[in-house]
Image (cartoon, rainbow, N blue to C red):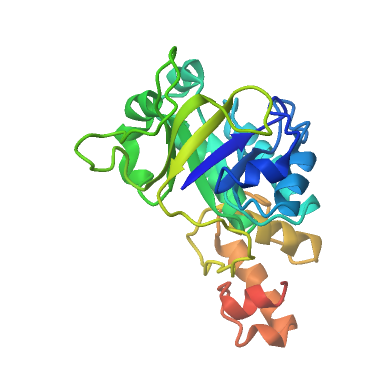
Length: 283
């Protein structure tokens, strides 16, 4: 399959013509200021009205801290909810200077962004160039091997107009590589100027809501789900202790969960563990 990724610098005059030439589109969702991309709404409507499948949205990241990664992800989620769009979110990471400064912490930043996206019920993937991947991500692939990758690799000067296998051996150049962007200078009737074009390997558009499975939480766990529950419990009069919403499931949080369960029979037998029934009580 062949598809395009589009942003405010890709004005489209004829979405119907585009729909006859490509199989899908991926749309830039927010800008550097975390505001909705200038043509996101227009591109989304044009794709929807002309039956161009949406294979995701992408967010070019400048984040250098976990807090910034989280706030960026929340900005993306806000736009997706505003437009009632359930699709995969591609984290576009290309800034080599940032990666050099972050070093191993880059993986923690990716994890934080991913958790925000997946906790909100959306799928997550990574877009980057092959050189960036080999330098900064490949050494930690054991921590990323369940993430779909969309990889860019093409000449920097002369345009590559016809897809060529990115690896002559025909083996995946990146584990879980679902798409390969092979040019930034593609030509598609109906689009003014150059446009990125990618070859895809069967990864389906995610346009239908997916069933969200929430993790069982118990004493000793430490993550954003725990933090969310601690915030909820405190706001509803169940004290989680002096540490507050620190994301660490300790004995005080366990006691608070137990008290909450006692007051809410729909949770089942109180045990201080946040399982399916306790989750269901707030969803």
